[in-house]
View 1 (cartoon, chains in turn blue, yellow):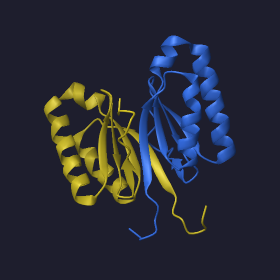
View 2 (tube, each protein chain N blue to C red; view 1 turned 135 degrees about the horizontal axis):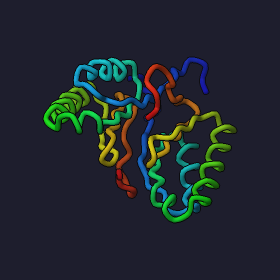
View 3 (cartoon, rainbow over the protein chains, first blue to last red; view 1 turned 30 degrees about the horizontal axis):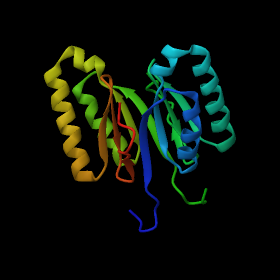
Length: 92
Length: 92
């Protein structure tokens, strides 16, 4: 590892309220990878979850990161320097 | 992004057979982050899954990466330059 190479962090969180989206965006700006368990919000309101995912999708499009579903429970979002590999193995 | 900054990849795969562990280690050596859905192997053999996780845990200890459970279904493993953030929000 080079001396000045910045440390990359991966964070796994549970999203319970749409207001937490702002914190996720701040983590992404800090180049953190965020894995979000969305089940609690999905159980509360599918519409709120859809709105949150739309919001994060637009954020990722404008900031150059990536977003993918991880099964039914989770979504993974990466900052600009991390890409989600889509190849022979599918995201499942 | 700096011109010479290497691209980091995140890969989500499903582990069905212990023989696939070698491919995961090769991805980690290439500095890929790997999210592994372990449910199919767990359903086949809990002993085989335990052996695979032990093997990956030792690999991560010797190579300087990190490993954490993501609920019942998945395990996330990072290469040496990516650390799993353990803070106010728990891994769930």
